[in-house]
Length: 59
Image (cartoon, rainbow, N blue to C red; front, side):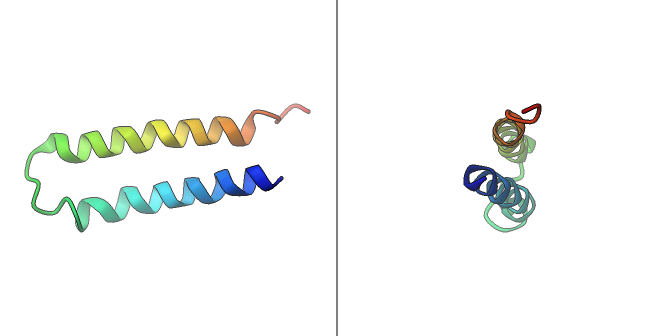
């Protein structure tokens, strides 16, 4: 249960990071690949976190 709470908080953190970073730190990056790379990495991390949360789903 403790691990699931960690991964749940991690997912919320990633969602907030995906929203906040492009409007703060990446504001001066005018190339499209700056935010695309960020959202790609955050997307992969979110998928991994979701796998960790749901790995014991059937038990």
